[in-house]
Image 1 (cartoon, rainbow, N blue to C red):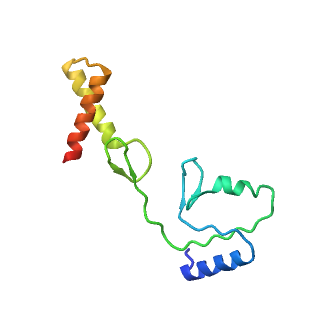
Image 2: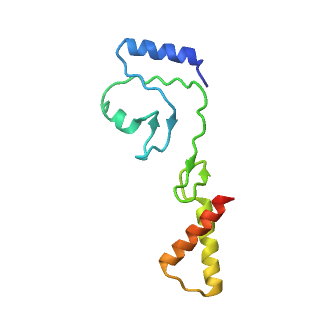
Image 3: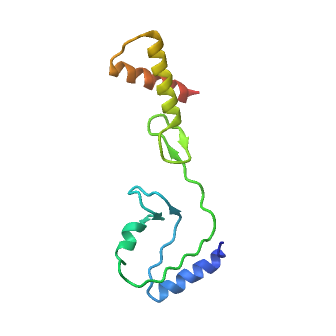
Length: 125
């Protein structure tokens, strides 16, 4: 259930006026540290300072967040979630099959060079 954004902002303003901490932003999981993140705040770390205290936690969902995409640092493929790049994995598997079929033995450096050349060619398309 969502709260009207104007009401959510009013609630946040009132909470701030009475001395409460107010955090706003998109809630994400996992953050870079593997915890929950709200905007730029790591919630695991943030909430740790309130350990063993009585709290009132008010959460007002104001709407869906825009989807986040992640870009592979090797080939530039845009993904919907963090993880192994399917394009790089497929390219690596194709190269491995080619090397097995030809019986060609290459040094690791030559294999990497060929792999990167293949990725560059795919990115040019």
